[in-house]
Image (tube, rainbow, N blue to C red; front, side, top):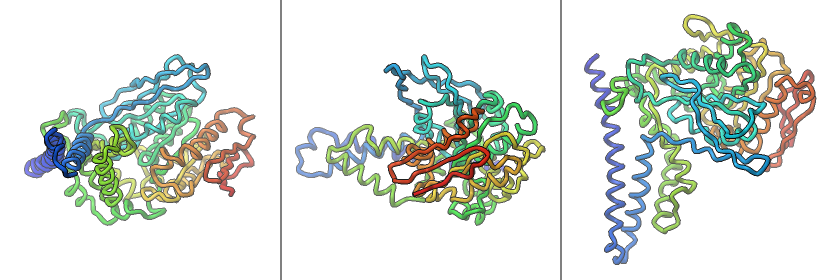
Length: 449
């Protein structure tokens, strides 16, 4: 056991050493190739070398930096800008509940809890989602901490602890909350709502919107689900789990390192990432790059990764993907079943992308069948044509089509009978009209061309 732990720590430090070395090589190449005397030589080599160094240094440095939220000011009706402040409301060892306080603005009618995934990236991955919601909502987000910075003395954190955190956050915000869970936390947000439905019905949120989450991973196969079935738990632990090195506060904690996760992310679309970096280096060498262009805005966030606790990663694979505990309504927290059938008063909506290769269509909409106690008039589903995983919560599809539908869904189930009776129509630039009709005579969201 000591040997395995030592080996895990050596592996962790080895990966960090590789990252650090690449950052240093990039910085060195940038500095050397930028000497003024090299400008006299009639060769593009030094410009390419300097460009490669700038891109490489920044890319590898971003991997260990938590991005800032950097939410822009919100324009008010009187022409004034309202600054946005990020304020922790509840602080916990493994994650905080943060509020985006809009200065000098009265509380909004829509109160939204955005449940961020703990799947390798920071909650700031939802920055554009937060920004798009703030003009119309008061927004709270689950801001998960990097496991490498959490001392071993803080204890474990698995899927049951994650669900318990969500229960506490929902309870704190109260019954007028609209919960939006993106990707990985969708099944756990469903379980947390079920726990409140049975234990504290008055603390349930008004609506629960699940976006691209693996409620039933077996409903549609992807590379993610195939991998989960092929590999045993012992193999996962042997291959991916490492021990945090002495450089960080969480030294000794067993984790699935963010850098190991990043290598998996990149491998899934290696050709696309390779082309993006080659194009960026060429643009920099030609003097056409900028410090905050589209490439850097995307990769500054994409490359910033965090470690997750070993027990959270392994229990997610075992219980959500292999045992299908949510899909079979057999998930429990602290020995007590989170019976999804107990949910009755919460309106539930699912959103899927037709081209989602992470959580394929069919996996998320399975939640509606599990919510057997919810009246059909309180259920809705939407399949966004042509949208991939990222697009359904932060891309063009979200901005033009999905966000309006989600806001309409919230309004329809906020206790306003007049609003419930009227259909809401939103048209995107793709020529597709999406109609959502809610109320006693409503069916699911329809797509009419």
